Length: 315
Image 1: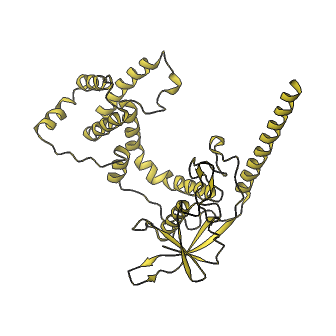
Image 2: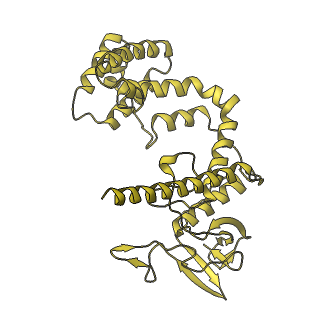
Image 3: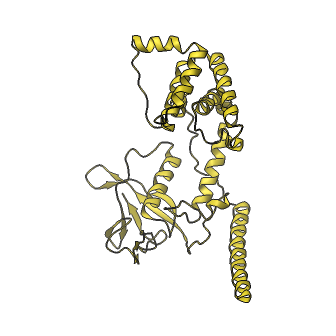
């Protein structure tokens, strides 16, 4: 029994070593590659302060509030620090007050007190002290890491307001180029469209340990122009043979935006593959999809036998 355990442990260790070797080899390839990563990155999409703040405060939907006498009365009340902190604690004590509600309230308070940042800062200091005392006997390491309270969202909004000028004038360009480079590198290897784990990643937790064989492809994409069958000039898009149809659509839209500096004005409802004068509709799942047990595999470019530059993809 002990020999069997030793043999099993040896096999597992060898498997882990092989995967780590593949991972380290891929990482070295990314570091030593001579390709120009920043080619066709596109214009840096700086937002003006109004739209920047709107996206930070209300990432899902814009909130439109029509001020009435009640709102004006509440506006006067929240200028009282004791009232405001008591109100925040009372709302957070309600079990029905969700995290989404807390974030919405924090953003509304930020907007309401935006013209008096010194007062907002003092309120935040009081709420932060209360939060620290509340978590002193619990898990202090998780403090300010999960935005589960009103004051944590307030702190995020406050830092965004204070850092806007610094981001735009100093580090914004460098951060954008870094994210663009990482995105380009990740796209050069397989990405699991379900788990989003990738072969080329900086995090071992998101590493795709078992990647299938793949090859790089260059596709010539033609966009339909008008309703009389006219098409645009071809757009060269880099893809992988293991990319699913939805992943190909994302790469087409990403390449379009990088090249022209603005997004394509309509969703890609369908793409067709031209071969020998015939058009084949590419779908994630269709009658030709491979089925393994109870699992239906998503169709890839390899499934449709798409080859490098030989055919075109048409919207």
